[in-house]
Amino acid sequence: MSTSPTVWPPGTECIAKYNFQGTASQDLPFSKGDVLTIIEVTKDPNWYKAKNKVEREGIIPANYVQKREGVRSSTKLSLMPWFHGKITREQAEKLLFPPDTGLYLVRESTNYPGDYTLCVSCDGKVEHYRIIYSDSKLSIDEEAYFDNLMQLVEHYTKDADGLCTRLIKPKLVEGTVAAVDEFSRSGWSLNMKDLKILQIIGKGEFGDVMLGEYRGNKVAVKCIKHDATAQAFVAEASVMTQLRHKNLVQLLGVIVEDKSGLYIVTEYMGKGSLVDYLRSRGRSVLGGDCLLKFCLDVCEAMEYLEANNFVHRDLAARNVLVSDDNIAKVSDFGLTKEASSVQDTGKLPVKWTSPEALREKKFSTKSDVWSYGILLWEIYSFGRVPYPRIPLKDVVPRVEKGYKMESPDGCPAPVYEVMKRCWHLDPNQRPSFKQLLEYLQQIKKELYHR
Ligand code: AMP
Image (tube, rainbow, N blue to C red):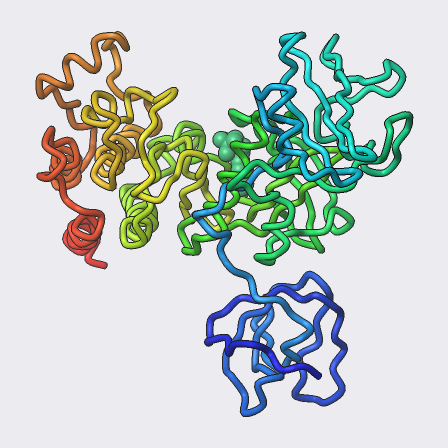
């Protein structure tokens, strides 16, 4: 048996590469794909004490499992690392030099805007095949048709089917890594065979959310079939590999399928989004202690993001989900960035975004604190849309002048004080999530003696 290269500390998560039945009573049997957590390093570095999902403990062989790690944040993951965008025929030929039969890339067509060109090295020269885009389908020979470039490349990777050669090696865009390779390297790739998709449960900005079953457990699956939006999903999933907290919706893994697109598999949150939950249950069902518990759940997650230097940028009740056992967890990491890389704005939810983020694109933990204040208001008003009765165009000018929403009916005064602190126009005067957590814990003690 080979020695594992580095010792994994307790708490390390691993994913099983093979089945292990175990021979001795102290062994922990597992199946390929199971997630195991290291508890203890044994004297022999080839064996670890670990536990499985149902907390059963035992000894496991190190070389049967792969350590799960966060996807490297410095790498730009791409589903189409061979897509070079608008480059010329000459640039493509330079990139495919030295000629290596089967080396390929795809570029946007210069002669036929809207179409693409597949460039392949073959016996010392580069062939350029026009990919015609019509009626939402792509085709080179008008015999085989594809929904997207990934499918087309997959097809010609398997078989030349009329091209000078089959596609053998992608010419990667500098600085990118194939998403599929990075997810497997870091231990986050799941097997499509283990996933059963059951029914649609939600519609997201980028695609449908489905209820699924993964190895016997209920899971939520985000599916995406189109090239452009799939890239945004890759970004969301790679952020999720780096985060773990009881109040963040947990990523279980990713499936990259050339044929059917990308799937992000997360834990299933049976009670759906917090905003729908608040609206449908309302005041008669949800007591003050329950509302405060949601505030605390979200605050704990945000304190974790703050401590790890992540900025969420889209915190709102619609992006918080509720589990079957009523735990609120933050989700939708599509816009989440490591603090240092936060710059661009794009489409922003105006009523949730802080004035400095809207004005100067200054996103920070303190702009998340502003959004958290709005979220507190949403919770205590049972899911109302913020700034009721103020036309959207008037919201920003009024807020900039210092306007703050009134306290929702029945909201305890100390909670409303917390909201107002989050809405300080000067971001430096807003509390940190660590402080907010302390305030809320104090309020809980005072109001509910717990
Ligand atoms: P999203 O694309 O994340 O905004 O999700 C759209 C909708 O799908 C949400 O509002 C939820 O109703 C549902 N949904 C998303 N993720 C999950 C999940 N993990 N568990 C249950 N429902 C979910």
